[in-house]
Amino acid sequence: MASCADIGSAMFFGGEGDYDFSNDNLDAAYHIDESKIHLFTVPSDEDTIHGLFLGDFSQLENDTIIYYLHGNGPSMDGFWSTVAVLANLGEQHRYGVVMYDYRGYGKSTGNTQNAATMAADYDAVLKWMEDRGLTSDRMVVMANSLGSLPAGPAAAGGSRITVEKLIMEVPQSSADVIIQNATGLSLPSSMITEYNFDLGQNMEDYPGELLWMHAQEDKVAPVETARGAMRRHTGSYYREEVYPDVGHGLRWDIGNDEWTRVIHEFILH
Amino acid sequence: MKKIIWGFLVGIVASCTPTKIVVPLEEGKVQVGATLGRPQINTGSLPLLGIYAAKGVSASTTAYGSAQLSSALFGAIQLDGGVVKGIRPSQGFTPGFSYSYGGNLFVSSRDFATRIYPEAGANMYWQKGPHILNISANSWVDPTWFLAEYGRGQILAPSFGAGYRLRYKWLEFQAEYKIVNPTREIQVPQAFVPSTLGLGGRGFYWGAALNF
Image: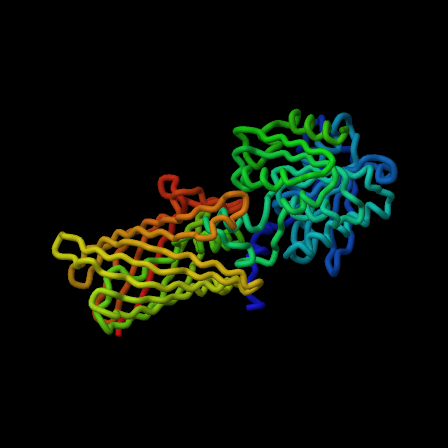
């Protein structure tokens, strides 16, 4: 049975990526100068991870950087407009933003399989930033949906640069919850996968600041269990924003004004 | 395809195994069969294979045991067993009744986590020669509901089904439609789980068996 299939791989919807990051599809308020759009690659184990950095390289040495872990879309392409908004929080080109594709997403090679591959990819990109001068006090980790899986363990002590500010946007809660919500039974996730992530435990172990944003009508990451996981946080600062009558696509549903207001307030806190 | 694989989750949803025996077998008769479950997810479904054996231990009591092969592919040993007892046979338009009880065992091959879920059910059926129509209700009991995270456990996981069986000499064919877990919303990330009137999940089941 050791070679049995692992449904964990079915959680990951990696696909093709064009990486055509242009301003054509962006609202003018969120345009990014072409000189500030940088594609890069880093090795992660035997695979190659493709990443995107928005900003000037000097920002990695002396300014705040948002490390964005994207959700379960095929590639970074689907999150281009999101990181463009983040880069322009408060004023144009205010923040540097880094995003990457997990293994098997976009042009990144290999396949995302479990906590180990997620952690390795997170660390590979973080090392790229560390080598260019990023320090803990200037890093904000923002995780959207699937991105919460590598963000949780990283915040709980698994990050080479300590996470002091964490934004969890529509996060999952645990692997056990997924199988239990799907079956209605008290089954543990080990029945179908070795990827036993537990964001509630991660939040208990995370001493830094947390902003949790969620949608009341979220069908992908149910709010009740996400709330249970996020409220286990016992770190230095906690803020939650739960929006009624909206779904998993939170930014699109609540609008950029509200979305950026809450995030920027948290960063400046 | 990956989204359809998630259908496996729905496939092991409570009470999502097919009703194997509706009308008790004759005493001494043995039935060996295979079942194909198609719990629906998105616009497709995943074939879930199972095998079972049953024996008429008396004129009104049949014992059965089965294994879900698809669960084994993903690392879960899923076995169930029980008995079906006839209350009264069908006569003309007057339906017959039977009831069942048993248990379901899940063991993870990864960490040997184990769960046992007793179940009980009732069948109303009409039998005319080789043709059997049935309406069935069943519920699993989760004695470890408190182990579900964040208070999401439930003690009872009911299902309702309607089916047709052709039991002819040494051969039996089965078809069944089931509504599973109508007391809660079945949630699978980034997938749509079709329901009947907004209740739980749903699936189609087929079976074929040999009688000895």
